[in-house]
Image (cartoon, rainbow, N blue to C red):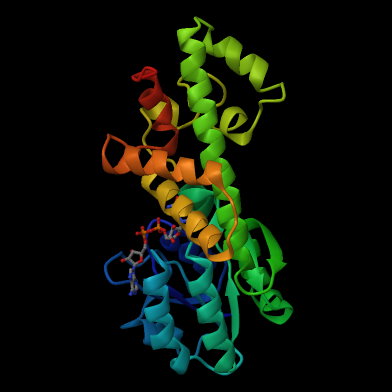
Length: 290
Ligand code: NAD
């Protein structure tokens, strides 16, 4: 396939490299990131998009996605598919899909879970919104870049699934960290706490697969001085998107709102910026009830 790839940063770079390594003809564009191995350099986003069967974007936010989409949609070949893999607000995802469909193109919102490791190893999970035909076109590419692609529904459904998942993740990570901090103060050994909770009703991905306590459970960013991993500011971004969506549809999400506020404080006023999102544990450790 001829693929245009726009946004070759931490995630987009290895995703584009995997598509090229699988034998696809990939033309990439980024404002500053280096060209990944096997990817031909385009002069502009429009240059990368014109003549492509599928254009994939992996950009920082909805505003940038909207401006890139407005630029490339008129240049894309009739019947081509625009597949945005960035994490953006549901409204931007739907607006871009409508614009693409009005221009005779297919459109998918396909945010990912799995981080830079998943992007590098081709083991991402894609959560996809859009029509069946566009999903069928891009499916072979999802198979190269990831291990699973779930077609969640119409335009915006991929972003909706992503922010609901990450709202649960933020809340459970905070709950896991505050429980470890409580266990410390109760003189309960962290390993014993893990042994019990990871096989009891308090278990979760945050405890079992991404344990925030160093030296306990599987190897995680906690064992590497809380270097990300999944950075606290990215968790804050996703929690903000979940609350923006909740506000738009009038959903009551008190735990999500509280998680957003805690990560905002951690990132903006404390030492959270640039740390893994599980560094909430040393944050709680240092605090006491006031
Ligand atoms: P990044 O900042 O490393 O990459 C974004 C790239 O987009 C940069 O290289 C930047 O130069 C480029 N860019 C910005 N504006 C552009 C434009 N107008 N034209 C062309 N290129 C442009 O970010 P990332 O970590 O690769 O994340 C990308 C997306 O994936 C984000 O939406 C993020 O929320 C999401 N995501 C990231 C992770 C992660 O662990 N890093 C995990 C899941 C989802």
